[in-house]
Length: 165
Image 1: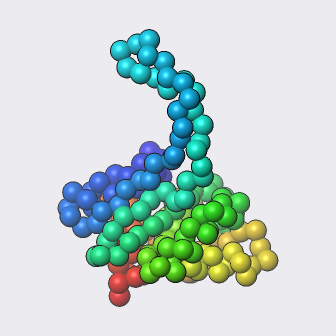
Image 2: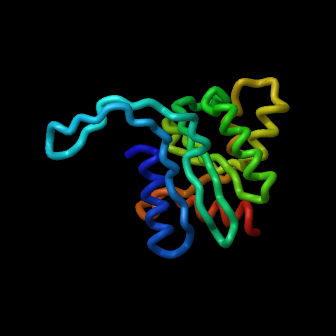
């Protein structure tokens, strides 16, 4: 199962329990050609309209939440090349308007997921002379997400710990 599927299943769980409302933001596409030759229509040509901002947004305890989910196979660091500048800009705007913004970062080979505050990542990105964030730094600065069956990712616990205590 993919990281994104785990997040989506977790979001469905949180919504069904009335705990939090978070949705996957659709990627904006422009359909150019559709094949109607079968019972169901099939898109045969399309292009991305514009760059999407972040992966997920929603509401928890009356606060707007916006976050990006990233995965890496690297064991020692998280490369900044995985983050687009338009995502940094978008998350800066969320923070400056009082919203909660963060990254969920999966270290696929280590089977670990961390929540990192977007402002912390943005500051590290701007101040650092590095092209990545070392794993040990993420371990220290982030909150490890407990993993289970349902929800798959207990990231609501990390949100509560980081932003509401």
